[in-house]
Image (cartoon, rainbow, N blue to C red):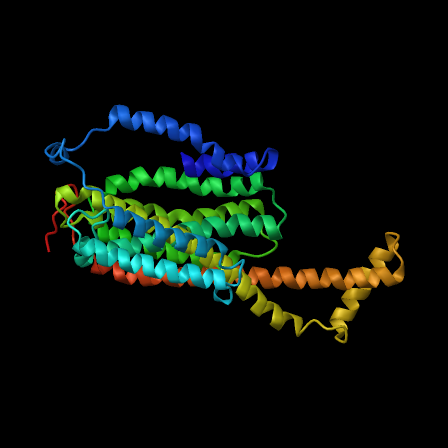
Length: 375
């Protein structure tokens, strides 16, 4: 229910209270979840066999994980704001992240009871499934960030209205997930994954053709439905593919790594699209401005017409001329930014197309049966 209710509820809270409450409302929910876990979740049989044994906590592994991931997250969050590697702060974070994560992999590879079982990546199928989950997280949050950002910054939508546009996509996913769950028991996961990536690529390409500054609420909602349709065919099948050939006692490690990769992909995707939009907007602005000069007849005529309207509204002629050119410049900025969004959707579509090709390299699974690979 969260993808359906969340955007609209979050928008309403932001408009009527404060964005901080988006985070604060997680506290009571988290408490309820903790109580439910303690009450309902039990250890699997293989874990009960070692119950009572002295736990060996991998303090070094945990420390390296915190250092590497923490530095990476801050770098991704502040990178665009601080001009990336033009900032000594961002450069320092990048070095800390690289040193922390590389050291983590080396340490965990040889440690007997690692906090992250990196040796699972020796299985190429598991490695590919995690790579796809990373890209899935990137694609999911990229489009999730882009649509409300476009609608609010360029179209004047409120947070609640933008949330309503996103809610249709959440409702579609709510319907698709159980359908795909049933299909997963009848069709090989890699074929569902391939279809999902193909649909996602088509959805991103569709966005490049229909995103503009005259888009209606209805068209924006349809655009969101097209963007998320392919995602419904990826979550469950990619998870299934990651378990192929893995022993049962590694289930927790598999689940942890898959979700970790999705979360990191989400962070990278959010940072990537904000940077792409800013840089591509500058690129398009440079080309558009070259064709918008006072000496051009079309621009001069447009400025004169705008000035006349502004003078008729009660402004003096000198101020009206300045306001007219400011309005023209604002239009150029809006058009350049829209083209940047189109470029970003095109890049996302290309990434999904590459994943479609790689989908056929996943190992076969036995639909509705065991997770052991049959090839």
